[in-house]
Image (tube, rainbow, N blue to C red):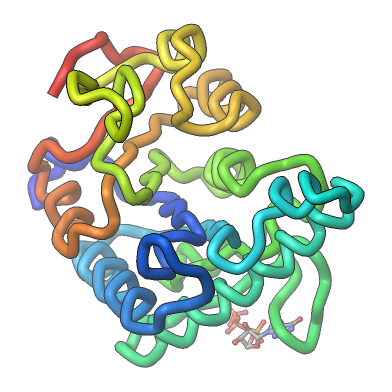
Length: 247
Ligand code: GTP
């Protein structure tokens, strides 16, 4: 790995809950989780410190439950619990292949995971352990993308690697528009002004205000994380200084 090609030593990997399942299905697909753990291992072997934030959409999406009439706060707490299930699944998959991990939960559940303590998370990262942050921010009304932005800033990560099922950010929905074009780079301001659904606005604003770059890439391609750290142009880079360009 050339440092110029991938100039980051400490990253926050944001995994959508959907990345834990086969597209179009729900629940946990253990082969998918194992495949993600392998990608994490490649990154770890390259000497990169890794923190992880996981969504819970494969199990339960707070917003969808709220849309059915449940109180939003309750629905969001259910969603946060879903992220804990995913965190434990990833921990297990990582430890099976020799990675040392710690799960920290934003909602105290001592029998299952450590509580989120920033200084402890920093120590784990210093010791090259993979820290998996569970239960979102611990507060309703915040997404796991916002959690990723917040934790990345708190523990001093240099970039957020946002793993999704699409290969980057497009100027319009590529599923509905055959002429949609993928950005190679775009600034936070452009992404917000164009209303691109990269992350929610709270998450994007937090990243923009704290100069935290975000790389959006497709985690379903087995080698993408490796490509990224090898400096192969992959996905879309969003940062304060990015000049608008297409892939
Ligand atoms: P160092 O202090 O750097 O040695 O970190 P450590 O994580 O190895 O030490 P610690 O004694 O804090 O943790 C040992 C094990 O217990 C690790 O697997 C932790 O994840 C786990 N652990 C620590 N605190 C808690 C907790 O409150 N609840 C649960 N369930 N596990 C915990």
